[in-house]
Length: 353
Image (cartoon, rainbow, N blue to C red; front, top):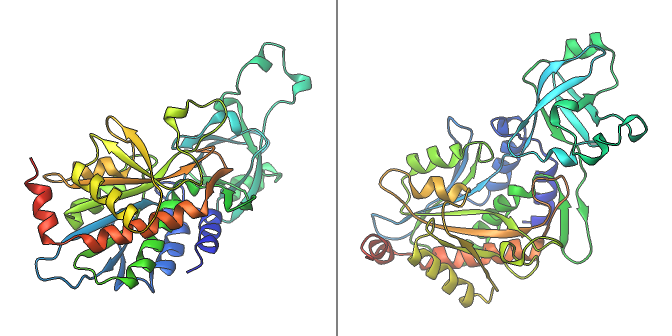
């Protein structure tokens, strides 16, 4: 599988939280099809690939979770003149919105731009403040009557952005949080072809992470895994950001350690990375991580959980930037970890204290 081409295609696909079915879910299903024994979906729109293990019954059950939804906007009002007011879906940074090209998913996709008063007409006081989201609007260029015919309140909007290949192995685009995690899962599934695996593997592209962690919550409840590994992004090193809150882009995936993470799972992931020669960094997570790992950990009677993160710069913008090498390394270490899991390890997870 060409991971870079998948990630480019996934970045360009649309799928705001709760609307993953519109495009990105099918992209993921197509990519998973040749790597698992079965692909299915559930009521919340999760895409679940099932790869059967070869160990004795009862086989360990391992869930991999990377969310496929993206932040975006939702139309709240059609103004006189056909201008569209909007609200955020997920953690949209209002500071970066002015000047963005967008796609409005009405009866047909409409290209628009997010406009704001030009600086010539802005008071000195206003220039010192970030624009409020309620002061911004989308202009599709269409007459009001046509806008009202094509667009409804509640229609979703995504950012329009091409994927850029930067220098080295860096890729930049929208929604790499967390379609990079889905790419890691695909890399892991490809790598697993080299191993004889005892465990059943459930590869889940989760829905609605950006608004509720709901996809991970319901899929882990239904699948009842013994081990759950969330794959997400963490903050890549950036000028002006405290070093202790970031990981270095291009120096390997980060393994989270803290209350949200089972110590034995962390140790096994670290060991697997060493065995396949993948450099890893440590992500300190004193409390709930705010990722699918939290939803998985507290499902039913609790799940032994880990979190593997891809360092990413400019999170929740349309120019999120990462290293393809970090994605490939994460896939390799996860495959090695999965291959090491047997019934004895699962028993140890439940009796470790």
